Image 1 (cartoon, rainbow, N blue to C red):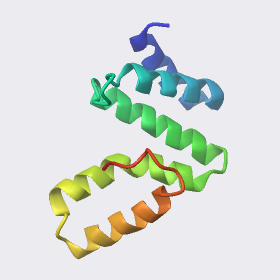
Image 2 (image 1 turned 90 degrees about the vertical axis):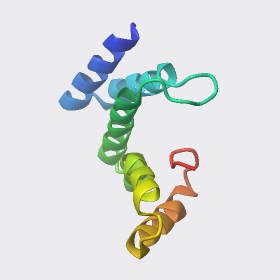
Image 3 (image 1 turned 30 degrees about the vertical axis):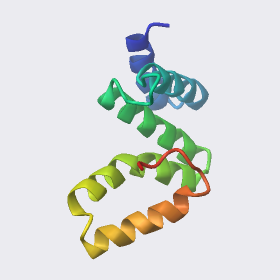
Image 4 (image 1 turned 180 degrees about the vertical axis):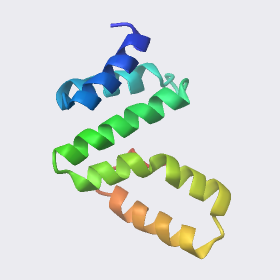
Length: 108
């Protein structure tokens, strides 16, 4: 499938509850939207794919995975804008603890 078609189909499958197909396409969108060096070529599409992975994890009862996937972008903004704020530091510490069980989803 073409990358753009994968992106739109991923959303449609997520919206109608076809989680396996939505998850498969989300993984493809992330693969296509990430360069060989790990930099992201399509931030918005990758973010939407992560939301899809979070939603499908939640539907499968994997609360931890769901929280990690949907918290990635928020964590990056908290770290960038509010790194010295105690509330942000507490949030990021809790998220890091949660993410240690599922590495690779949180920003460095």
